[in-house]
Length: 167
Image 1: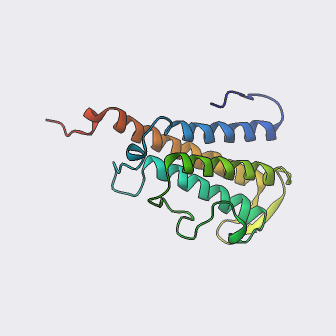
Image 2: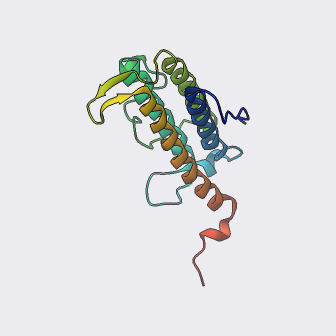
């Protein structure tokens, strides 16, 4: 579990620490789940505990490896055309595999982000001109939201009585 909390100091340290805490919070929502429980569909969408982690790994690749580093799809860690930006997880991928993929993508994102100043910017076809600061804050928001989704799914898995309709 990530415990190095930075609450004051340089802006970049605070932003990067908050992002790392949200990455860890997302992973914590799936720790201890079986592969079967991690794949349980408890909502109408494809959102499952394992798919949240898979989606987060794709977000890391899209924004840091492809956008900021300018890597070709084939150069990205764990890239598969079917999973970019979706919640699709292959049948042969275990929860441990997907967590490891997200951790590798996160580490590579840290390395790529470190090459840029917070005010460095690039043009995004969908978002316009964005800075590294904006990207880091986007990832904080993305992972915090999905950790909340994961918390709700985990609560449903751990407390099956919550899934039963009211009498």
